[in-house]
Image 1: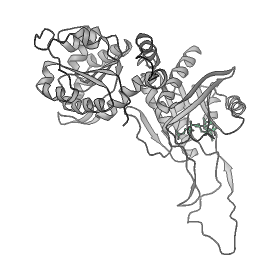
Image 2: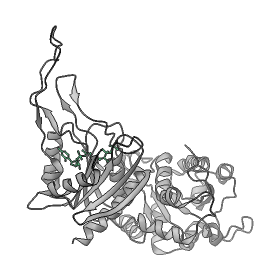
Image 3: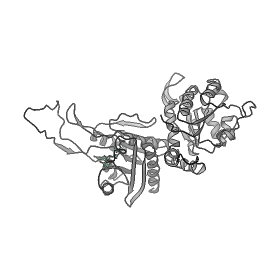
Length: 430
Ligand code: PMT
């Protein structure tokens, strides 16, 4: 990993959950990414992991008490020039204190004093997590602009297999980079002094965790595979990265996300409902059955336009003396057009256009032909963006013309910007 968090001050709050041990790895990863990490612990957390561990990992004294003469860490100075405060793990007790505005230890006082973005990663017993009080506290914090990383599912310390686990440190790290990504990628010229307030405000606006709350969003992603025989097929180079990044960005701003995905080699984000499909016809069936209950559908999949008229039962054999093989292809259904043309329960419909020539004209004509509300154009002739790359560059159109252009940057950032634009455009239509 390269130093993506160079010059970033991150306050890492560790509250007293069994997952506190994972915060050690998180601290180490953040330091490795170049961040200046300051750890604050609750008294309960110190029973699980020693202060000395975090002091060694972060290279700074660790604060616990507000009035400790020995420590002399003020809650105000701790967060004053911080880029982000993250609490991982955040226990039910700490979340409740944050919601109620209680400041009875250094961490809760620092939370109240923080003007930087704050993120929490709740981790606890499943019943405590599902308890209405905890759920309401989490919703309240989201509404107030706190970033919430949902817990993972799996074996918990109490012996059950359910949600409540602290996500892996690498995932928390990625979450932090995503939150800070706008500033890192777009705004910070390394030759300029570190930006202060205005960028903080922009960034908080970009990925407000409550922005998509209550919305149901379906995204298609990846390629489709159209079989020719038991071992051969027609497909394309779509990796699913763009669609999966959109799923994560929609999820991070509170939407309920379903990802209908062709075969890819990446993992779906935690908390997103994954529907795996193979062919365009499978994808159509899945999308058709779910589209009516969505607010927004986004077609980022690279659906094969044609499939073989028939799939050979046995492997097609090479024939001696025959130099040509003709495949009889027939048109696949157009999935995103079937959503755009729905007469009842039509969701706000967004398509992508993968073009190599006459890009703007082709994209705009697809918008009309497929009855879309927005179309996101990417020029897939450019090797460094589009198919299977980590970056993209897109231009967005509605029926009145161009509405946005996002220059080349990581797909995770493009996804956040698109999500913001899509939700705003959707809300403007209500
Ligand atoms: O997956 P990655 O490697 O990250 O690459 C991302 C991407 C380049 C695949 C993505 O950004 C993208 O452009 N997706 C759409 C690719 C595509 O099929 O474009 P198209 O111009 O052929 O189709 C236009 C729209 O119609 C798309 O929304 C597509 O999903 C949809 N479509 C196309 C054909 C079809 N039979 N059914 C459809 O729904």
